Image (cartoon, rainbow, N blue to C red; front, top):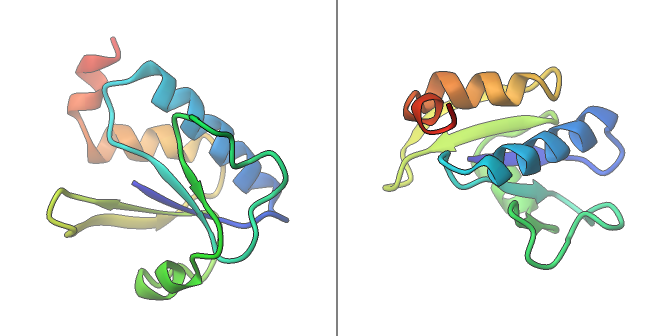
Length: 108
């Protein structure tokens, strides 16, 4: 799951925190946070469960992520399963549960 975020977006900060909480529970897809420009200070924690990559405007363009926060679920072959804007941090676990139903069984 690719998470397209912006350093000046309060909702994006919440989405990154929610992604890290989800990743800590395990059982779900790999999550990666992407920023078109620099990431906010402290976001690129070494060894974090959700890696953060700054300067990835190429991926913003490739996946048509024109607004943040935006999430794109891809399968192992790179096929897009779902792409949607996230209106709140709570929208991320909902999207994960709907897109990857096996995640529900593994976190209960």
